[in-house]
Length: 250
Image 1 (cartoon, rainbow, N blue to C red):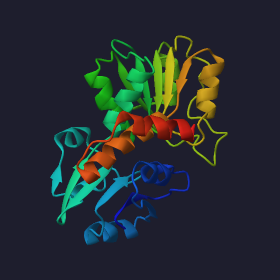
Image 2: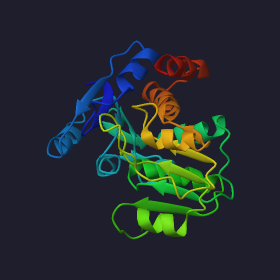
Image 3: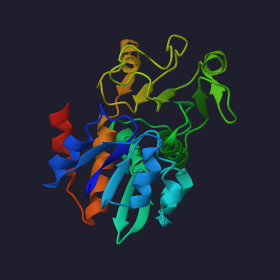
């Protein structure tokens, strides 16, 4: 594989379509089990890869260099192989920050709930910190240090302004699932779902029915893919490249 995406389950992915629309270059999807993952990384038989669930943190020990921003986030979603030397980056940060800006979502001083605490959540939390969000709470199904449960969130933080779903709950094919009951959250002004397939998750539909701004993860996916492609090929792509692909996918 020269360029592509690795992850445990990739049946939902649009990455091949996006990257091949940006470049006349093959881009492959490589599903890796937990046993296959270390073998793949040790071989280093690629030029550039993107990384998705559940390997965004697991790839770090295999890197020779890590971009300071990715090191701060603690997750890597883009790896470039330069003469058998692996460089790690996080383009999710860029994609999410641009998505907030484009949709007019101002997190400064706001109370924000972040659902999930995987690799994608790390990039979201870094963006929220840099954009001066007020109170930021991470929510998980199980009790864990640094997180609260969904029951605690509803009881203690029903005044949240923004909710961001970084978990895979609601992703195709389990489209009827939603990570959270929005009924208690009457002060919501916006929700973001990093899921992009389906484009309108139940989580987003519930928010839209409440009159709340609801943004899916497709724009973030395309924007981070453009940044990743620039890292692969060490050049710049015009903004129109992402705009065209996003409109076609929508």
